[in-house]
Length: 399
Image (cartoon, rainbow, N blue to C red; front, side, top):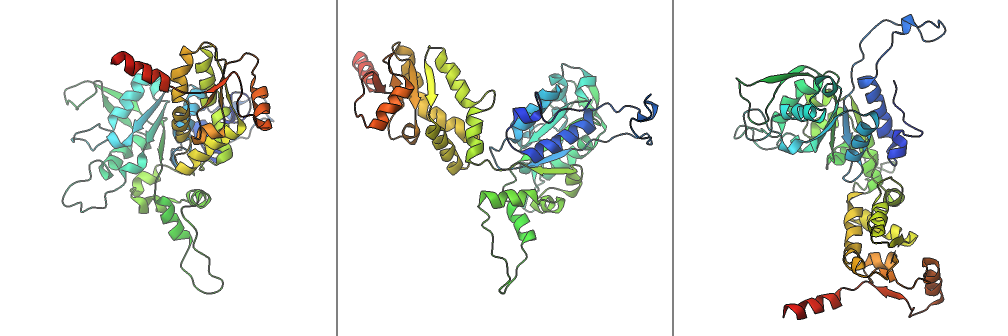
């Protein structure tokens, strides 16, 4: 069975943008998990081509991209779509065997638990190693101290990632030679390494832009420009990752190197509103529990996206900005039964004033916006969010 990329229920419906990443992941999934029929024995002679039988190897993925561009969310959606167990492991917690920290085998034990302790299901799962750029080789003098959380982790991961039968302790913690072990075959487990790889764009830019002088010389590119960074990540080759600090043996076990794009304003606005569990839909649900409607204007959405874009935190910044704008509103609204709508526009997002509460049943969002266009200063049945009175009364009661 081949897994859908487009259409109802496909990967395109659950993630925004990042077409190149979704295409690569779909190919890797089909190689790792699809049951290959015997095309030579199909009854219809016109179907398929006679080929020599062979085993299809998996293609592990190295996923690059700036923070907040949807790497982890994309992998979560992928595992949910094809219904396979998924483990998201933090590479910063891993250490070389024999040192304080988690051994690399603990990743497979977590996958075994995630699969409901079903070995067969576990051996067809996905392991996502997040923050993989943090296990780069140390630049210090290795003769003084061993790089047990960097290069040592890469060496420990080699056999697991490539595909071998690994002895995994049944109990988490330090290995006991006399303890019981599980034998897990990692041949069909898809490994995806993800990370921001900050500074990799400079290595790529240095490689692609050779120094030159004269009238025909290329001008130096602004490496801080998001578009330039996207171009650099798209041109990454294994040698760039080796120069970054990954060992060649580790990079060679990830034949697919793909990068997510930095999110622009349109992407951020779509993330706020379009996905099934978007932030705006979540707030609409939260305010609906108090029988209150929630409305954000188009300019308000763009202002939230613009603020997150300036901060450079990607989609993660949208949640913090929205929470900051609506924190007092969530505190006040449950104690005001006459409020029927919370209104947020660009001025509220910028902090020029608080969000607006519509109290008069006859005051709709359309009527309020029409009055604002007419230049009305005072509007009956409308107030801004304020908790000063509540704080004063609380201080008086405490006194």
